[in-house]
Picture 1 (spheres, rainbow, N blue to C red):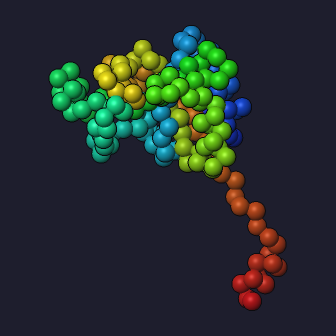
Picture 2 (picture 1 turned 45 degrees about the vertical axis):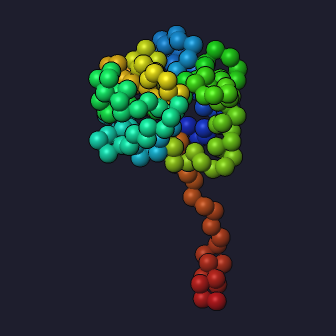
Picture 3 (picture 1 turned 180 degrees about the horizontal axis):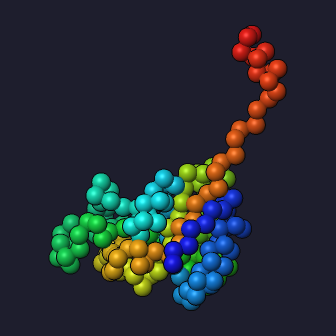
Length: 178
């Protein structure tokens, strides 16, 4: 069963505890998960198919970040089986991202994004590492080893952004009428 949950915030105090709680309730016992940040409008696609990627999704072939078309062809990996993920360690309090050049705290990345207001349009897809294989010589490229829907554990979206506070009707009319 894929968990779909809305959160008021994607900061470290909210997201990671909710993630760990949901995974434990689902019976997931792994010490790490694979996370993908996507635009919120792609979350519904992921819930239906297991991935936000489709036939229009690009593969960039950036050296060290992902593999080349030749490597994918050699292993028989179609473009639809490719995704880009962060390997996040859940065993410690700082939840380190393990597949970047210099390990970085996922907590700090969450807080930086939240403070910059970058999370309102985001969703996080959470995958079981057993369903994917890291591409050779690539930091963030992974290949689905089974149906993506079978590897997807959870989708977290942000609660809708609250409306901007408005002044009184009299103030608005005064501004409009000059």
